[in-house]
Length: 161
Image 1 (cartoon, helix red, strand yellow):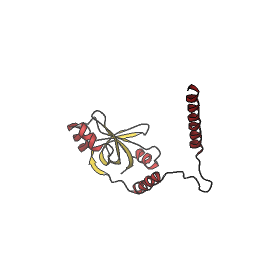
Image 2 (cartoon, one colour; image 1 turned 90 degrees about the vertical axis):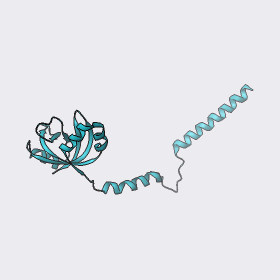
Image 3 (cartoon, rainbow, N blue to C red; image 1 turned 135 degrees about the vertical axis):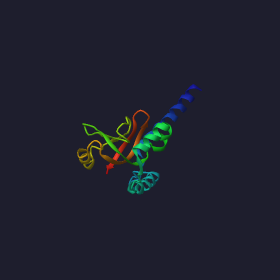
Image 4 (cartoon, one colour; image 1 turned 60 degrees about the horizontal axis):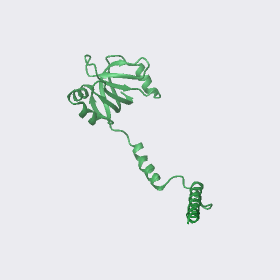
């Protein structure tokens, strides 16, 4: 009886090895070229194409309004604005020496504002950054990446106006 069990286990093992080798080899037909993507992934790609061409719609808001909402309820402000596309207008208070960001504030006495992260690969943003002055009114278009009661809002900039 012991040899019978060993023989059956060996036979099952051989079938498993053959199955694994067949799965790795692909077992494709010579007549048909291999399909590199599944029908489901092709449908997803087709659905995403129109969205990529769709132009973003930016919600216009002032830095002062954003800061009032943040001070009133940081959790609600985060839920409302995080991941949203905004057109933010405020007073330029900080220009980073390395050109990585600028900071917009609602008034000259505010400590917290909207940090606008610059896309260093975008020549238009870099040129804009070099031609603005502290105190100037700036409008930034972008997506809110973070919201916090201590650091304020972070905006990934698409363009400036």
